[in-house]
Length: 179
Image (cartoon, rainbow, N blue to C red; front, side, top):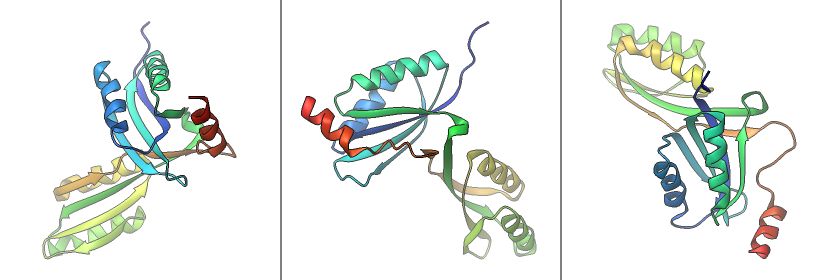
């Protein structure tokens, strides 16, 4: 029976310089893998950036991608996050069509799901939500009947549970001195 494709979260500690994102996204494109979401940020070390990539594939396909990433000069540390061993969050901004008579319904739903209403217009509201991707999916689904005017999602960011850290400056310094 063929292995089933599923979403995988890959985090990479990479050199913070121009062209790195292009090389990494190009690696995925050349191999025909789609990046479902991508989040890039600086770290506490200004020489490094942290990339969180969500990609759909089998375990073997994702392992192959990780091996290819590991060959890139600018990739210093790569980790595949296991769902139970990581904390994942995503940010949603959503603008919903809300006539005045429906506003209490939206406010009630927002309060129930710990969603902030951050802007109110004559016929719309903008809500902000941070949480697990499945919780965000549920809120988007609840807003569909009102009419979603716009939405933006950041993509997943994640950290591993416990004391293990991807941002290990000693490893980075050792790698640089060995190259």
